[in-house]
Length: 256
Length: 260
Image (cartoon, each protein chain N blue to C red):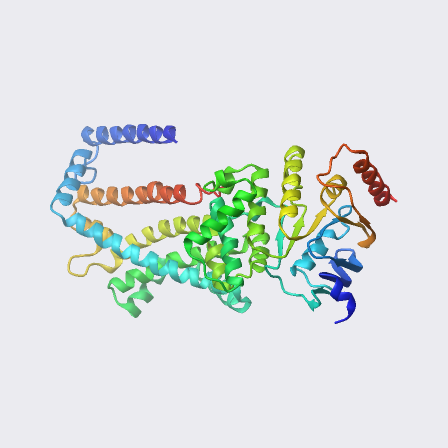
């Protein structure tokens, strides 16, 4: 693990160095290829004047709402399809149809139905999270060991007890890997949706922030936004999810 | 109910079971009649494929019979329940997400609910510890199952089974996956537990020595179709010594019967 991070650091430093040398060489115009000094200055400026922080806050809060709603809905639907054959047929069909559909293809429709506000962005996030999460949860539910269902019968658990005491914890590895996919997809969906739907009272999230910077041809600003998006993405994937795994399935010896 | 049911605690009557296989119907069990006394230690001994595990699953209520019925104290017993609690061979039977003590508490809570009792958290913990103590696992109460050896896992599972407070414990080759030394330790533990607690145990195994060491009566089965060939009384005094002449005489007798 340590080795992985030191390797990563090495390559990041090397690539930054090449970037900076290219910028200094003057081979490209400063307008389209800013140096790292300019990029970090822009990043520092917009962080310290609070404008970037506000956009980060907007993006994070909206993605959290979307993840929460979609995860609750996915749990409910996956449980329904576990317990009822006819529900399984319907949910299976819906998932098969909707899962391959990129969220961005739905944006014109969402624009007409929900306008261009927060609800529209939420819809895009929910769409990008719901289906892969249902797929993962259903796989998880259906692959719990048979012995657990026998134990549930033997100890006379009712459906609710079975759900919370056995089904959900037993399929947690699938749940977490589903959440990882969900996070990655919704983060991408969020940024594109923000770009398309624009801002309400100058608050439009990170996607809108980058888009704005492009309008003013502020390339260091564009890169500053991109760096923030990368950093948040990596932090969540490598730290938050890793922590969750360490506290649960890794501790329980369930991580394969 | 007739006089027959009165004398037997658990009665299997004319039980048959077929399974669909690629080569048509396979008869797993045919005409099984068996009476089990209260607090008896009964082993079902037979080669693999003789339907002994299927029979145990039927008694547990996990499987339906094609013909025949099971009577418990004269009443037909069908659905699974805590009165007939199963101990499996598979190490997976413990919940990996719960500490050893919580695995046992799971059963304590289920038993309390089944008996319409309300237990406080302290009472649940105390009871769970009592059962862990019985299987000598109290020092491992805060371990997760994956941190335990195979033998310890089976002891934890045994504690959970005991905690269900059922009158009948069904055991499906519970010591089949541990090394022979651990297996003997577990057999001795079970022997002592049965001696102290009032329990009826139906124990399935293909290990003749295990059957001789543990049980009061041994039901011999054969395969294709799965049938009872003989029921042997085992009156060797306890604790039984594997090296004694009588032990080995009974072992040879059973071996002969199984191979004939």
